[in-house]
Amino acid sequence: MTAPGTLTANLAGRVAVVTGASSGLGMRFAELLAGCGATVFAAARRRERLDALADRVDGIVPITCDVTDADARQELHDAARSYQGAVDLLVNNAGHGEGKPALEETVEDFERTLTLNLTATFALATLFGRSMIEAGQGSIVNIASILGMVAAAPSSQASYCAAKGGVVNLTRELGCQWASTGVRVNAIAPGWFPSEVTEDFFADEKGGSWVRRNTPMGRVGRSDELDGAMLLLASDASSFMTGQILAVDGGWTAR
Image (cartoon, rainbow, N blue to C red):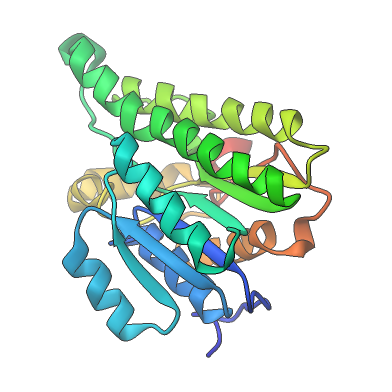
């Protein structure tokens, strides 16, 4: 089986973990990596969706996990590591944002968004990173966002922007801290792509029109247009890359 779309890579014999794999980009990443030969531990809270993915795609191992729960994170790590003694790839994809003006956002709202998008990313990166360092190799791919690089204006996303901005610089910091260990840490910063996170925004024609008007390429992204960045960072093709943020955004952050 080859990867969805037109790109592929040889990931046979490798073990990958993808969080937030029950929908959207996370499901796409899990399917992509499994299609390239990896055994993929697909993690999310919605088990029925993971089971459906595993029924449809060879190489998927579904595992229920709330990434904000320390015990669940440990169970995910132990299950994936026990498969063949090491995990080669971690994709920190789980995340969500809620758009509202900062003056309407409570501290509890803010902390909840940071816990899911940033704290859980740090916790999983260090949990898996420790065992990767012991093994002398591994790749961690954090899914950031262009909203971690630029403001969301005219929409309002203070907590999400703060969280994803943290993911961006956390990626750089861990990439440098672990550069000599054989473990690489990089990130993909998607631009505007249809997903569960953005469906309400795109349901409003004004939102979709605004995105297309302000994206230099004049359109939103297709899910397959993240495949190249993911396969680059997941494979040995990026063996001399660490601490890097790949913006796949139709030119949004270059404006």
